[in-house]
Amino acid sequence: MKRLFAFRARALLAATLLGVPPLHAGGEPARGDRGIVATVHPLATDAAIEAFKKGGNAIDATVAAALTLGVVDGHNSGIGGGCFMLIRLADGTFVPIDGRETAPGAATRDMFVRNGKVVPELSLTGPLAAGVPGALAAYDYALCRYGKLSLKEHLMAAARIAGNGFPLNRHYAGRLAASAKELKMFEASRAEFLPDGRPKRPGEILRLPDLARTYRAVAENGIDWFYRGPFAGLTADWMKRNGGLLMAEDFRNYHAKLREPVTTMYRGYQIIGFPPPSSGGAHVAQILNILENFDLKAMGADSADFIHVVAEATKLAFADRAYWLGDPEFIKVPRGLVSKEYAARLAKQIDRRHAAVVPQHGMPDRANEDFFGKHTTHFSTADAEGNWVACTATVNTSFGCKVVIPGTGVVLNNQMDDFSAQPGATNYFGLMGAEANAIAPGKRPLSSMSPTIVLKDGKPILSVGAAGGPTIISQTVLAIINTIDFGMDPATALAQPRFHHQWKPDELVVEKRIGKDVLSELEKRGHKLKRVDALGAAQAVGVDSKGHGFVGAHDPRVEGKAAGW
Image (cartoon, rainbow, N blue to C red; front, top):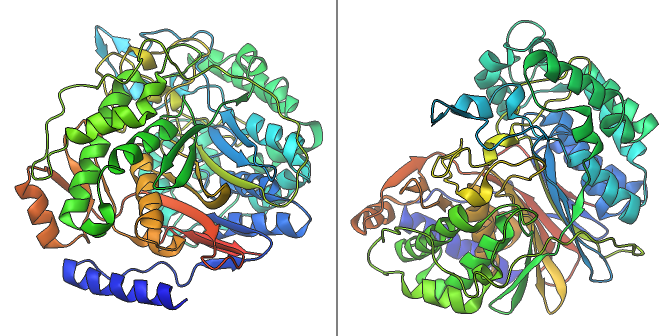
């Protein structure tokens, strides 16, 4: 404990010297002996703790939180979207469950191109933007095999919140106001989220009766109600009337997939990430492999040297992401991206004093021979204490494609925007794509979601993930570095100032609270800075440094909650 207080004192002194405001992580990390959870909303965290108290395990707590977030944080995620869930079972087995959305069977390579040019709005708003939702299938798969409670129990609890209503927090109200114009374009969306004709303000109660009925229907009838029954039929009917592509057959054909985790070692710690179609696991590993060639601890957290080197490593990884990454069922993604030898070559390209121009992607080892697999396997394992889960869920941009299927309350995603609509074209987040991420029927779009679990000597010590488009990768890398290189607890690690570079556009996004002298030095080195108030939202749980149970923290940039039991 003295070491922790000493670290915080040093961090406060460093913050003062760098011109960074003192760290505010919402107090001490949450602690628990039997379970721990961190989410972006207190009601979701409470639902997870209640699942623990009912006899559930970490898988139950994750699904309880996810279904509740689909209500109280529904602009970000829900059963109309997708997820990646990385589970570490008590016996040491890793189970990466891919609940990513898929392109409709009628999707075509150039469906968002008109007169030779990409029309961005088509992949963002309206019926063409939606892929087949996968989150519910993933949650059901996880519970049936590794949970202790039923999907029905979790759905009914979340349905009560949807039916009774909940007060909007500042974040939800802001997203609602920003999306009101697009939501008004669709009758059911307008009725669900703007019942008074205007966006509700922070503190006002939002009730979602249609979503509550949908949750109860799935609870009573199982996920076939969603994938092979009324919901699929209602969606297909609406799509036919409104020029969309999603059909009932697309829902019938959907299945969550099991993947093979991405693994690397970083300074004696084992990093377990999610494989393609997530780019997160591969590029978190790649960036850490590059950075292992530098003494980050000697540079100091948030120094100009530290930010410069990490940004340059991230830039190199995102150049590779744009060219090599896609759905491994459709294209060959080279395993060499995460090799130590390739990382060492990339590290030598980093100039410690100048920001480099990266003209194109690199060439990993055995790029045409050794690929990430197309594995779909099945695990049936006994469950006990010792389960760890990192799960990231999304509908992509706020309120997805802004379409609510009438009578259901379900917001459909706009994950079709995560495909490369045309080689070299950028998506909503400014990410450039190539042929590897081209649209194809049944294909899963590339994602930046990066659920990650870190082990030391075979034992889990950290579960971390984030929200925020491509910045997810940077946030996850920084959380791991802050934990391993700088010895921070989860609360302190998540409160540190953040920065992000994604190759294109060639700009370094930095939080404004990074010191002026540091930012000035970065500009001298050739970085084009984009200053923002806050970057992303990460959540982390770990183990107490003395081995006394769990610790957890929510991101202080959002109104979340961490709690232990």
